Image 1: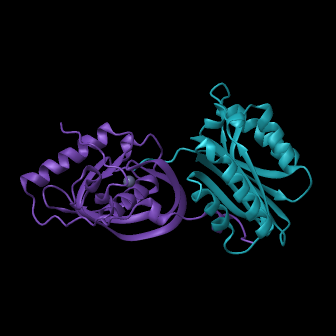
Image 2 (image 1 turned 45 degrees about the horizontal axis):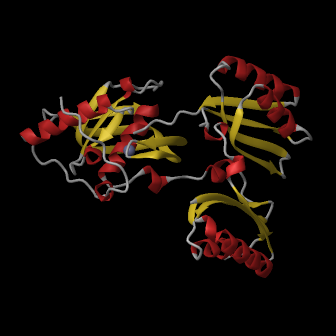
Image 3 (image 1 turned 30 degrees about the horizontal axis):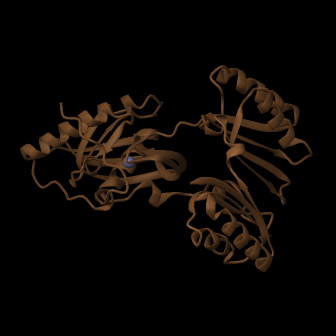
Length: 164
Length: 176
Ligand SMILES: [Zn+2]
């Protein structure tokens, strides 16, 4: 059990791109565990390694912890080198970030994605993910590129109102 | 540091926010929340800021000069009389309402909200003139004593009486 502190803005580490995982070392195994434990202990349901101060491309998503309905639920998924292969049905939803606790914002995300990545056995997984689970994957993969929801905020105005 | 509020209106053009915030910056003010929008084509601004109280006179006269020079209507007030615990309530529902435009839509809906003790945190409305469609989006705080079911029932009833369509969703953004 190793719960790490969740890093918050304006820590510059959150704006740096993370490095791909090249091989499964004991350190990477430890990172999987720490990310999993920290997600369990957090009020959220997903985390990316940079949020606990490690610039490696590893994420954890666990919709079971989300207390909200998601059309797909793969339980706890921890992946390295994850990628969104395909996405459709972009929808605007309000989301927050554990690394930016005071704010929430409206962000356009695909409601359905094919997401791929590797587990600790080095096997490539490809999942069809929808709803909040899909939103979480996109949010966490953004963290690996140093992108925060603040960088993607969409105005409700543009979508709902005719701007005069 | 003492908290103050400003509202301002004027003929819209570039440079107005800068003209106002310059007065504040030069008097060592610390800005809090700011909202600026174009309301029916008119520049409209709301702003909170913190200031060493001894600088109040300086800000006040600087704003007056800017107001005169830029043809802006600017009001400056201390925030203290308007602070309250209810003003700290966070939204827990989003309401959208739309329908054919007619008098009384905003009044009827907000009257029902008031009767239910539901507090409005944010409210925006628009009239889409071509379609004559009136649209409202509200973020509201429902008190614990009121069940979501009862609130939904009452609001939908009101919306029905004014021939509008109302949807209400929980406002509960995930932290990721
Ligand atoms: Zn985040």
